Length: 176
Image (cartoon, rainbow, N blue to C red; front, side):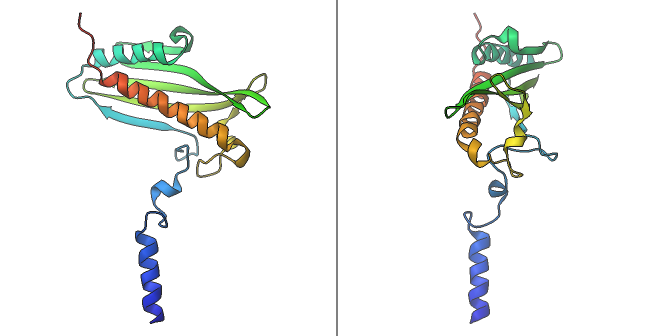
């Protein structure tokens, strides 16, 4: 009877998404690459859309997503299908002031698909020196206690940037 109860308990624990140690539970708020750096990347298929149209749509998105596209564009390679931006997300911590999370947002396009990569995250308090964002996270990518609320807001803003890119890339190119 005792073994049966233990087997049932293990079966429930291993099959329950709330109790099982699934990859979603192991991964924290910020995804980390194998070296422990914050790293967002996805390849998105866009059937029937040319690389040129995707590039134009990515560049139009950049102009709207960042205050000044000219200030953030680091690489503008239409022929190679690469656009690299250096941007920042601004937020505040309690009464201690404003901070920025600087990042690199790269978009690569090919006929029918594009890939975005967001990495190179740096925490930069206003008037202070930059530190890697990973300094404020635990090993699973979750923010340390004092930084939880502001970094959750930064994460939400980052996801909005990514969703904005995806929405811009699914719109058909304007043909006048």
